[in-house]
Length: 305
Image (cartoon, rainbow, N blue to C red; front, side, top):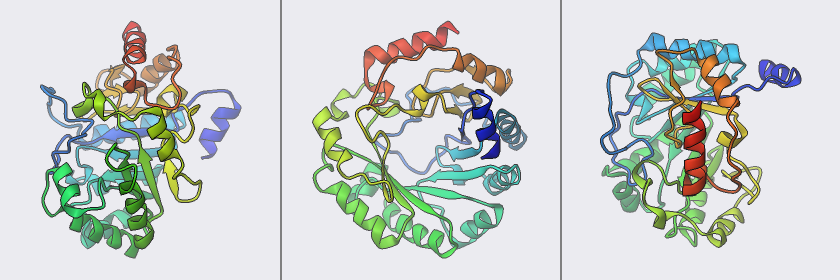
């Protein structure tokens, strides 16, 4: 935190968060997956030393948080090693998981490695519906069991869910109730985004009245809304984050697929400097991917650099 604060005082922009996609592999086939893109070219995953190099480079930039993303990051055989490396570098560590592999042995190892926070996805409070949306029978039960294991080992757990047209009246409140009963750290609600499986599926996006209804659920202590007000800007537009894909491509975040460079060929600092020079489109209260005009504006700005 000191490095980030010092950089701000010196008026040097730094990415406070770097998200590293360590694999595209996953047990699920989610209807909304942001990384499941048709005809995606998938080569070998970043090796352990390459992920560690990204962490080192991010630390030099002043980054204080690293999130391991997928696919399903717990499928990496070296995930504990990666968490330990980031923790030893003085960074807050986070994993975004579907919950399938959250057993006592693995969670114990993650605790010892220094995991700071675990995001676990719940798409619907009904077990059968959740499993159908994720394409993996039996997942809901393992998610609930995994959250309890995280609690046993005192690893803060955040339930991550998305607001859909079908759940804004009752479903979201029931997911929040599940979180309260399980005594999780927080429940985070995101809006649907036109990316990945939903890149050309505009009918899933929420209207302004629907987003406002979701925002009424938010509170600063337990329920976090990704964009809590109509005037809120996402991390991409605020230029506070970067994402590195399992192939080394660097984009503004996991949900914005416009490549700014590749970590295998370029230094992270050079890519970051290029990103900070881009004039960003003016979008508030929503993801930039949800407006085709702004989406093209951002794509063109990135490609121009």
